[in-house]
Image (tube, rainbow, N blue to C red):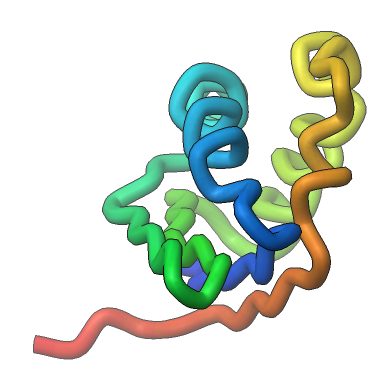
Amino acid sequence: MLVQLRTYTLVAGAGPDWERVFVDHIRPIRESLGFTVPAAWSDPEADRFTWLMAFAGDRAAWDAADAAFHASPARRALAPDPAGLIVSIETRFVQWVG
């Protein structure tokens, strides 16, 4: 299983709006494509949102599912575009320990 740690720096004060979009739209769309979200955290004081995204497949399958997410009609229909709530994104693949 592949697991990616994703940390978003949000526009100042955008945390509640991002969390609503994430819970109501982003997460369900990702899950419909085979991803799971084992955990997500908000750090309002730092305007950060951190989450784990997992996928039971190899990197090529991950990349295909990720591309399908970005091209999906459900993702493209989100207005305003939630990317406007994000200043920067840091991602890295991580491994479970223990």
